[in-house]
Image (cartoon, rainbow, N blue to C red; front, side, top):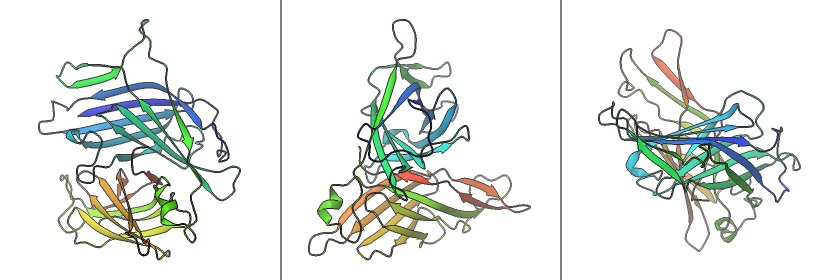
Length: 316
């Protein structure tokens, strides 16, 4: 199993919100990083596991984990889009962000970071900031079990390198009622996913949901690239995966669909914007969903939910 761990420490103190009129952005310090090859103790396993720990000091504030087949190198094999993964708040301290996500391009050895936060200077609105970190110098070797791994190259004194990642605030999203397709195409498109819900029956001793019991997911999507667009999404296909679904919005120009692979926990979102006489503007985002699934009391029914999740699109 491949594993990449990146520990980030916020350069400034944690606040309840962030300013959205700043031009300086936000800086985080990288404390540690690791990439492990396929787990040789699990024959047939080809999953890469990516983990990121964000911290305001030495205590992890957000834990970020993603999995995808090793050969994908961080990109979805069908859409060829980066796979974004949620960073879960640890409960240690007060986070300054509503949601945090990361993605990795393992071919180029680059980590991408994005976070959404309430604007302290624009009440009722959210800001989006994005940044990148090249992992240019790595030491790669094998564990005693034979699994490959990589870590950042130590300094000449043997200390961890001083790595930092900075994020820059994205421009204010245009309004859905007045935005033109040219304006939307110039804006970085992403969504905040909320109200994730999925149910299935898992009998004792089994590792797969009982056939025909998986409802597939339902959720809402709030566009961060066009202000005022929120989708309500629900599975429309039969109870066998991958699941297909549709997303409805009060904005008539906007439409979306999704696909969810329950074996890999990969969610693909496709949003289309009606441009009138011209071709529709399509945006595709891919996320690794790690919703918590809890069993009902004295029941074999599991219900899955999730905190708000940020899903990005292209490389930043």
